[in-house]
Image (cartoon, rainbow, N blue to C red; front, side, top):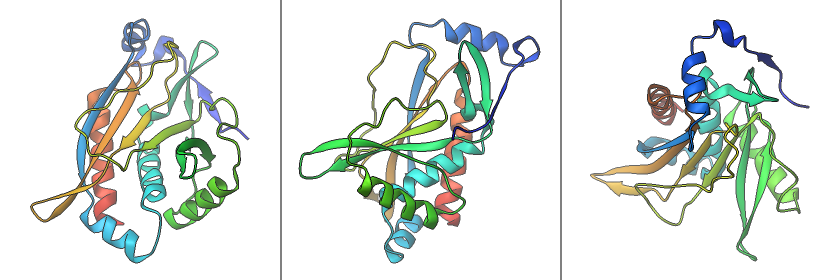
Length: 209
């Protein structure tokens, strides 16, 4: 069942002009990479024997849900605001070295989500179960390398406003464990200040979990 949404009255919407400007851009999305200090978070995840990848999917998507700008989408030519956004993530088949895209509803707790996501990923046989819905965040963990920049394939669909969250291989620096994390978002809805809010929310989650 799809999540609920409200259609935005663009005549009285504060982002109406900005939305139009970026909606017609050749490349309407932008991508930012930053580092997260995951020292304490990683320790707790390992102690509880949870999947770090699935824990990060939960952290990223739950934090993004708290920021309204990440829940806007285009739907049938209109701007809509979803009440809630669920998750989609890539999951590697180690035998074939091919990934599948897994859709999982966001739950209330990290532990509950990790268990549900692990079961769903294990049970899913298909690589792709169909087109992704509008009401997901798309996550692609890349734990084999650390990076300072990332780019994505472009479908050419200017109204595809699904945010993409990526992260690479974590590493140690000055006694801290750092993780490269990337956010790609549609500029019609999301500005750099909102990426900054997400970075702050994620860092707080890493420290308080």
